[in-house]
Image 1: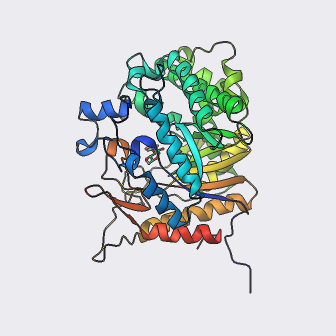
Image 2: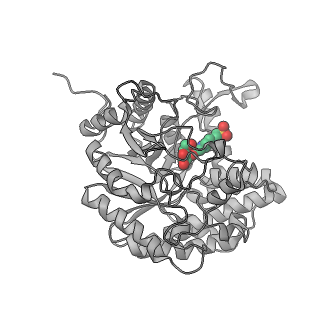
Image 3: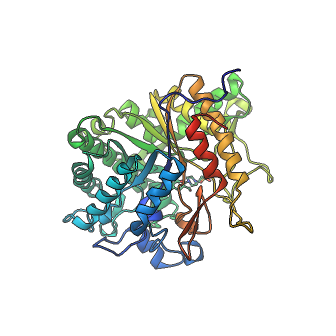
Length: 451
Ligand code: GBH
């Protein structure tokens, strides 16, 4: 007998991920304040089919059953997020004890089921009250994040040991304040947006300090990063195309990864930004560059890049029939799981990683027996995991993978029509049905290898 192939490292962390605004519902219950996504939805015209996060998966009331479901599937780790407006309804005012109590109950329920919680402090649901005072474009929002993070870590830190500060700065700043596709739907100047990026970095540093100060023994913390534009996959793995892809990766990630991992904005970024560069106060970069324990990466799709004419990096357009999921940007490019890790390690010296999200929106169909045989999603997950295995095999310190998402959920501006879950949700009845991908994933976890 030969050794089975595609084994993952011992202690590899397998999990599923979700986010508060996408699953909880109970948008106005138990003292929760309004979030920018509640406002964005009620304003109308921004979200497909007029959908809102008001009820979502009703996880706020169904967390016990959802935990039992995870436990039945053998999912040992769960990445959740805490809703800032549930905990501090006005963003920087008094704490809402009932909001904190919910997370307390949730964490206890998870732990009792043997599931390890991984908590993200901010996954886009900014309190509307803070947006009314300027949102991420003003420094006071980052200042308000500090006491919020401290409150949460003090309350849950005896049981939550794995923390993420912010989810995807390029998304909530870029899409929220530059192109206006996401809440709060603003389209501001480059100068203002760069300042917003800086405030988000600052908030990350404050949250990191909160975990270091109040997290107790064994607490660990990192940021969840994503790439806009998508990570660069060399067209063919030759030295020259790899160099082109790497150069483009460095150029497009320097604004965040420079401050985080080198303690400064890269010269190239400052030269390009010119007068639009952010204003930085003394001490800011020290806080931002405090060492993290790991970097989380959300990786869905990449771009192919080659060394073009003049040796300059050139991004290739995707053919019309290139395989993709149920969203225009969701090009199925498994190599992104390898290159997303390798570029970050090579260019910015990032030492260790979790894949905090990967998954696919697909047009699932329920068969006559009520099953969802999502052969497509399973194949996508499988092919991406092969590339993650390759990264681990080559010695990159990839410690875990979280499937996005546990449940079909409120997919932001796409509403409920785009389904990322490994568990199907009927939004009329709230019935949960694990898809084939969930049953398959459960077996992958059990055997710690790709099947
Ligand atoms: C993640 O965002 C979120 O963390 C999660 O909440 C969400 O549900 C999930 O992924 C699925 O979308 O064509 O170059 O403009 C990922 C959001 C959306 C980021 C698409 C980059 C556009 C690439 N991504 N996106 S581009």
